[in-house]
Length: 516
Image (tube, rainbow, N blue to C red; front, top):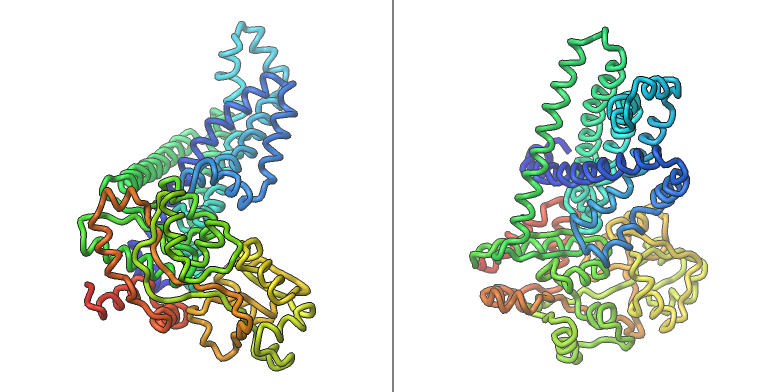
C-alpha cells in the first residue's frame, strides 16, 4: 500500500483534492442552510418539531437511494454528490444550533432585554456567542461525517478518494482499496483535530480571563488551516469545472468493470495522442448502464463503451433476444430516439455466463444451465443489482430454464468472485472475458439453450459530439475489430491477477498494435 501511494502520488493527490473540494462545498452549503434553519426554528418554536422531523426523516434515507432519487434531476457527477452530502450534513448542524440557542439560561436573556438590547443585538451579541460551543460541536461532527461519506460519491461518477476504493474492489486490488480508505480516514482525523481546537477555543471564549495567548494562537492556526483548505478546494473545483466544460474536452464514462477501465484508458490515450482534444475520464460509474445512459442523453458524457445486447434489451427495452443481424435496427433507434450512434466496434463478445465453485459442480454434477435448473432451489445466487431487472438477466433465465434459486443476493461486480471462492454464494453471473474466469476453482456452465444474446462491445457516442469534432470518428474507427475475446481476457487477467494498472495494460496493447 505504501509503495502504491509513493508510486502513484500524483494520482492520489489529485483524488485528495477532488475529495476536499466536494467535501468543502457540501460543508459550506450545509453550514449556511443549517445555521439559518436552526436560528429560524429557535426563534419560531412552533416550527421546530416539523422541521426537525423532516431533517431526521431525510437523514434516514440510505445514501444509495438518495443518489437514485437525485440522478434524474441533477444527473451524474459532482453536483449530485454535493447535493446528497449537503442534505446528510444538515441534521447535526440544525439540531445543535437549535439546542444551543434554546438551552441558554433565561435569566441571561431577561437581563439583556432589561438593558435595552434589541432582538438583533440579543441574537448576535448574546445568544450566538453563548451557543457557539454547541454549534461548533455540530460543525465538527458534520464535517467529519461528510468527509467520510464523500467516499461513496464515486458510485455516481463523482471524484474523490472513493474512486481508489471502488476501483480497488472491482479490480481485486486490496492495496488500492486500503490506500483510498486510509487517506480518507487520515483526512477526517486531521480535520477533526483542527476543528477540535476551534471548539475548545469557543468554550474558552466564555472565560475571558484565561488562556488568552493560547486562544489567540489557536484562532490563528484554525484560520490558516481553514483558509488553505478553502483555497485549495476552490482552486481545484474551478479548474475541474473548466477542464470538464471546455470546448475541446471529450467526457468519457466507463462502467465499474476491469475491462471498462482498460477501454477507458485506451480511449483516453488514443484520443489525446491523435487529436488536439482533451479527455475527461469518469471511471467506474456505479450502476453501469442504468446511470451512464441518462448521463449521456443529458450531455454529461460524450461517449462510453457499451454492449449490443445491453443496448437492445436494457436501453431500448426490447423483450426479444438480440443477435447481430438486428444491429442496423438498433442503430436507427439510437439515432432517431436519442441522437446517439454506435461507432468503433472493438471486436470482442463479452456475453453473460453462469459459474459455480468447482466443488459445487462436482457435488451436483453440473455441466449445463439445464443441470443447474434442476438443483437451483438448493443453491444461492449472486449478481449485480441491475441483473435482476433486465429481461436478458434473471427474469429471462427463469423463463428459459425454469430456474429459481433458493436465495438471491445483490452483489457488486468486483465482489462476486471472492464471495464464490469463500463459499458465501453458490452461483454467480460472470462475463466471458473476465480475467478470473480462467481460475481453476471455477467452472463456467454451458448455455445449452442459447439463452444469452450477443454482447459485442462498441462505443456509444453523442451525434452532436461527432459533428463538433469529426476527427473523433477517425480515432474510434482505429479500434474497429482490434480486440479479440482472448485479447480482452488476457488484459483483464493482467489487471485482476497480476495487479497491473489498467492504463499500463491499455498503453502496452496500443503500442503492440502500432497505434501509439
